Amino acid sequence: MGADSSISVGIDDIAIHFPKLYMDMRDFADLRGADYGKLNKGLGLKAMAIPDVHEDTATMGANAVMNLIDRNGIDPKNIGRMYLGTESALDGAKPTATYILDMLTQRYSDRYGKDCFRNCDVVDMTFACIGAVDALHTTLDWVARSTEKDERIGIVIFSDNAKYALESAGEYTQGAGGGALLIRRNPRLLEIPDCIGVSTTPVHDFFKPRREVSLRSIISNVMTLAQETGQSIKKGIVERMIRHLPASTVRKLGIFAHGEEKVSVHRDEPVFDGQYSNRCYQQAVRQAFHNFAQKAENMGRYKHDSDERLTEQWGRIIMHLPYAFQAKRMFPDVFRHDRENTEMWEKVAEQLGPSPEFHNSDDPVIIEIWEKAMDGYRRAISKTPEYLEFHASRIEKGQRASSLIGNQYTGSIFLALMSTFESDLEENVNLDNMLFGLCGYGSGAKAKVFEGKVSPRWREVVSRWHLFERLAGRVAIDHITYENLHKGLQDGSVLEPEGEFALVEIGEEGVQEGARTYKWIGV
Image 1 (cartoon, rainbow, N blue to C red):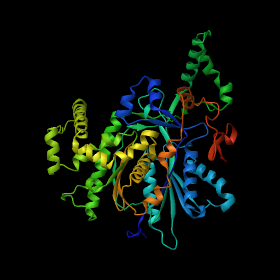
Image 2 (image 1 turned 180 degrees about the horizontal axis):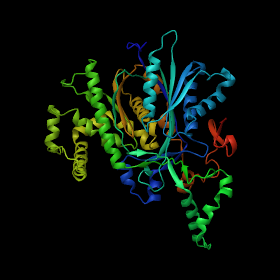
Image 3 (image 1 turned 30 degrees about the horizontal axis):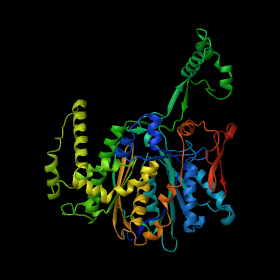
């Protein structure tokens, strides 16, 4: 039995939790000898959220869900599923969502019973930054199959720590946070129709591979370090250590315990190519947009030969923002494709001249020349009065919170949605029944384009968020604290946890090795 297409489903409310600590971008620029003007004026960066010692993917997600439950007075027994979108999972097999469930059970068991979440379906969904959008769409389908007598309520969780290697090209785009979407029938915030444009292409623009370190390299590095500290190392010691390792303490501790020559190493920091990833982003969003337009036309929602372009019908456009100005830089591609062969575009083309002619060559040199030319053409589009007006009226408000938090990976698109809603509320803008266009992206790579219709009840929901007010109450950290937190060298929490879930222990041996223990810390 399929979903009833007449049923209205969507996002009823959103909660977000972000770390109380942040690194000011001016201080970061001083630390790295970078140009603050380029980071701020060029990329829109003002601050990056930094998790404290007691914070991780699970705590940020659990705190957000708790806020959502409390604000809406939800009985946990009525929540049928909680799907987590993340690329910062804490385990290779045990879902991070189960840790979130454990914390919530601790918090609500006295009031609702120890089994209050027993029948709640949880799972992690991973596809880089688009995992939470995937979780949203599958939960919308599930909720749409409910009835008035048996209404289904789902929560989509997003939580990530966008962490890059120190002094790497992506370090300035770091950020962190968790959030939760309440998904139900007849939503008070945003109704989402069942029309999704998709583009998927297997590429390596950004990924977190299973890294391996050899036994020989570990011992060699230790010997090198010893020599640098002035110790004398005898010739051939590395080979002798490897031969005698089976009986050594290292073997007994479980490292290389079974005679293996390499050990797997987990790192949160990704392998990435920034310029290539930007091109993948542009191509995927453009192709997903075309796919959405075709589906919308088949449904009678939109006519391709209409004078009103599809993106003109969207009063706001919400996009995944790995940095605040990403949408401003990337959307000119869709802007052009949606307006070609129109009177308006003819005026823009007069300012720009002809676009670079497409090539049919497989020569990497020719491809690179063409791509650079297209990058220049897109930048030129972004500076035209027509595009600047379009961006200011439809996209700009979504980037305001991103400037203050940084990249949230799977949550970035929903942070942009909250930023837009709260900015419009503060400016007393009437969004009733307005159509929003949403464009998600995940490296690897996939884009999804869909739309939402704003409910006339949106103000009663948004007025309780206080997003920007809470952002103003955070605590700035210095560069020593920042690097200690990044390296895992910080001795204890910078700010003692209060009124939140906190990580209190990680098992170190036996069957509890790596098991994480969490606790609610009251005010």
